[in-house]
Image (cartoon, rainbow, N blue to C red):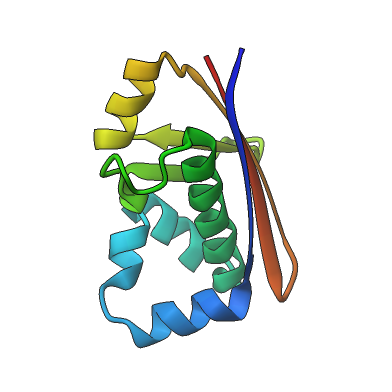
Length: 124
């Protein structure tokens, strides 16, 4: 049974501007795994933007936004060996998902030079 669906789109330049102008923001929004992955890419900010969009889409799918104390750094988007993106949750995000019986996360990411988009489906 589907618990929630979320989608988000963001301008890559907006993420690039915020991350380059705000010390510590990268570490606040992203896990070390995500930072390592994005920094290994030629166009790192496209990958940061796609992950940001996925985290926003995840929050929308939860239907709670920030109201349950879920932090962006508790939602991690990493890739399987095949390249498929997957979501891993920690802390308050994990507790909320367990309490609601949410057991499967589906995520799709796409980005261009200027835009990134993500869709998230949460399943009970």
